[in-house]
Image (tube, rainbow, N blue to C red; front, side):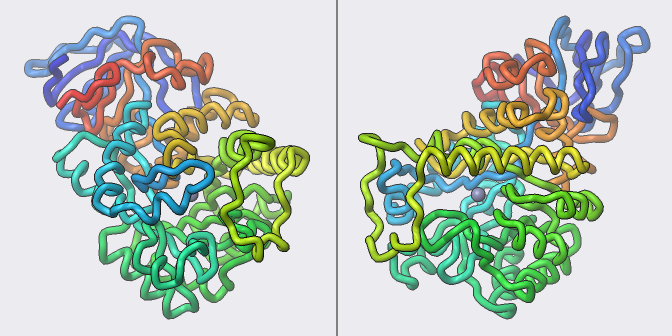
Length: 438
Ligand SMILES: [Zn+2]
């Protein structure tokens, strides 16, 4: 289909992204990338130079947003995850991250917030229309302490500092200050910090706090000095979440250990939760195969005396705790955004995993319209882009999906990419039935 820069989508039902049900018999006029007019068909007036696209029976909604991906370009199986991805040629990895971003776009996600070096440059090549791809809100590499979540312990310190593709190792306030300034210099929109561990390896435990208050405060101060720059913090235990909230962090990633007081404090301060539910609720089922399928131990045994081997029972307990923590957040009015933590294949298949997170939001307690709100308006807030994208509203940039069935009926509708007919980014038709229009 050829669609110019001025067009009207006619006879559509509109799902605006604010959490409501579809409104029927609508027309949406887009001019030069901006939503110009939305109204009932009976009030629609044909304008010269505006191309009419009749879409009887179709639904128009905001493009979805995945607020937590690592466009890392890596491939690894369970046994050699970090080994394979870190030791790979950087250019191959960078080129493959283009495919990863495009795969996410093809599932109806028109924007992503990325944590990796690659995102800083993907942002440029998609942003200037060199290649079709989603908008990339780039954090650049995140900040990890020595021995933290991103300090891949299988390698020497020097090797990780030189080759870490999603992190900068920084210790103490002054190194944090420098690291924040480095990523901002390179064009980062936000700053990511691993405030707690994350179970990447035995001494990287999610129950441990990894950065001091002084370090987290420095990160927030330096980032906020450049106005509009959000800080997103990986925080998986109550103490680290609480420290981040008090330090002025803008979004909490994972955050599966809330109690009532903390949820209320988050809601009051407007801190957004990116719960990564597909990951934290299903990790033990999806990624920790047992028996014959169990990964071979590649980690030196010396680390294992502090590791509790995962069992089905532990997994089930953690999963239930994460679900309850999420439900508490929703109940207390914490803002929710969709973030999948897509990192590399085949572990978290690009695009598929974003769509999977959309389903998980409903499996863990949201209604479908609430999940759509999280995936659109909520995530736009996490990107600090809600003034431009995330809803179908006059004056917003036209990142839109045209969907064949009612997306508020069931998460299966958006999960099934065949239901996504057209995808617009800034008013430009970019994907038609899974193929790039370019
Ligand atoms: Zn992540």
